[in-house]
Image (cartoon, rainbow, N blue to C red):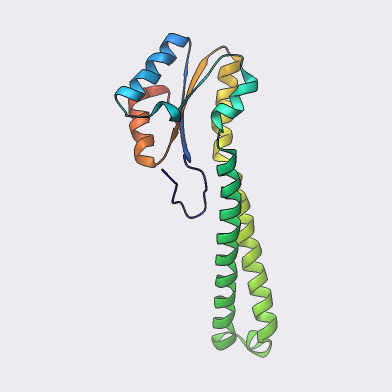
Length: 174
């Protein structure tokens, strides 16, 4: 299932985590996810206590998808910013104040550049996925505290909600 998101390249952009005190509780959650929510085993990761070496790979296994997110977000949002800047400059050159009408080239250069840079900054913020920091930090804290963490990589918001309903009160979503 390929992700059709306009700027994200990850196949599973949504994550749900839940912490458990022992392996049997975590295993029950994994079984419930397969039986009740219909989540394939390939989308579920189990992070062991004190396993910090493997923790990052379990929470963020899609390094290729992250790279695609970087490229897609920067190209698409950069082009959108440039188009917006040029369109805005065109409106200002035709209908704007005297300063923009008397210097159309400078208006196009300034607004084209400014809107492109702002769009690229937004793309950088999106591709860094700051929302994943919360899940990484929570998983790291649980691992250090000796807890088991179930990490579910969801393809869409609907699957994320099914997973959250299945594993219940302790779920952390993004």
